[in-house]
Length: 337
Image (cartoon, rainbow, N blue to C red; front, side):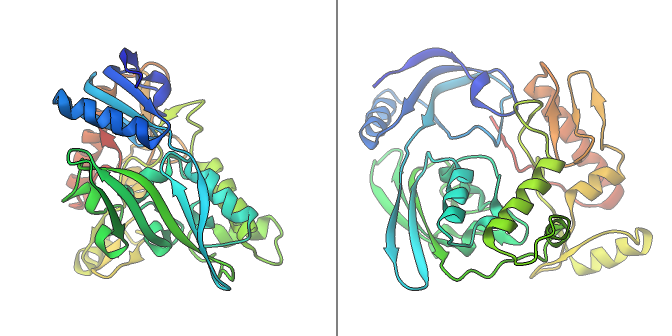
């Protein structure tokens, strides 16, 4: 086990915020993971698990151990005439797994192309985009309890998936290290092109016969046109969740804001957070080294050497303004560390 001390984390988060970890460890095998967990338990040291660092905003230095997940590997766990169950280790890059599925002509996650982060983070967030969520293809995951060191299999139902939510953000928050995720991908996929501007993008690409590859390509083109590259401008993608409100609340707001977009949900209406933020005048806002991206109001950005506390403060101002104007409470999608 190799523990580094006073490790700078600038290179390990897409926001480009520097934070110093009191202790830092990278693990590439399950044995190395067990060593770190035993060390942390023995020394009663706090443990913070990182993957791609694409959903984290550092606002202070990190006490305890920051554990970087580098568990790699993919394998077919089950296959029949209709589906393939693919088991992916949690340190794999999510988008690489999407590209693997496209190359092997099995569908179900092509709409989730170019979402940043690792496989291990995907079920925690129940990642989703363009009408598809991880829960739609999720079979099970294997995890290890950080304190008892016992392994457990979580089924789809046991994960309690909801919109950008799971049991790992509620009842079991901070209790488990996810080892692997198994997904069921279809050999006869039905492409979903009605959400957002996918069909419009396919038309512009002059696609006649829609395939999972063309859908993936379209999603990649859309995301690249809207979202800044973290290698160029520090960001963590969508900073806020799209809020859900009651139908009555929506109808009331619709009387004033006729152009308010919405999507039907089980309990009412989902409103695009980007639209709300833009209506409050935040799109393109900049203050020193931080601000709101000029093409996508959902994305808060670090232009150069911003502090995490500055970006957090900006998010609080945005939340307050949306609440005041629309009586809608925005929730952050990004984890504050």
